[in-house]
Length: 326
Image (tube, rainbow, N blue to C red; front, top):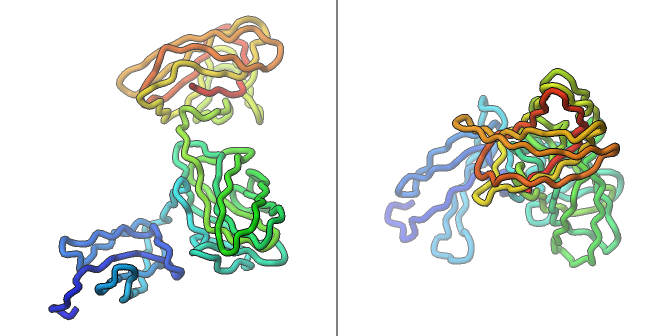
């Protein structure tokens, strides 16, 4: 507006109060770009923002906001494999402040807890996290990362950030956590002193090539087995362990590393790949061993997406800790 304006291009955004784009809605401008259809994705409050450069090539000169609210659609999930901005946190212990560049800052004194809910890791396991941080000096900063809230959740890792300070500049660091996360969950970060956190992202790794624990199987059934905290032991007659959604890609896998123990004799393991249309069956043999050990076994190459089952036939006696395709 007005109808005879020289500059007609506008840009639409759905943002929170700090100007960070949110995933509560999908915006679908019409062909002219002057109108937009809003498709709700999850509950929450946001600002529909319409912007015009009005002839300026470097910045928006006109910004109009309309406060809006979505209800009745359930939560909107966040992709943790893309940078999750610090200001998108959903809960805190009330000691946080605004961080540089749409991040979040912890308090100078005392512990600050920042929680992010509705993170969707999908049917994958992720244990490598990257965080751009800005600290006030070059001293080591310890950060605790929990799945859930600290008082009731699981400690994923205690990481230490230490870099020479560059004023008002975020610097990235990457850490391996002690245990992975999967599915839809929440993460809490505990800071013990002043830190600016721009956000975080996880490294995306295919489940098919991730080191998987036997106890993480989506289903375990059969005549005889015992499930401990770290392994599935005393596997006997007709026991199966199922893992779904394994994508081996175009190159495929040609070997498997198994950590286990076969206390009586060499133990055959039947590996079945099924996708609803066909099934591939392969058999490997784990050598007799009194202690847990890692064995690499060759496979005929398997490509594409499959559900994988480990099947133990009558006469089996096996303790299964973990495996990894390669």
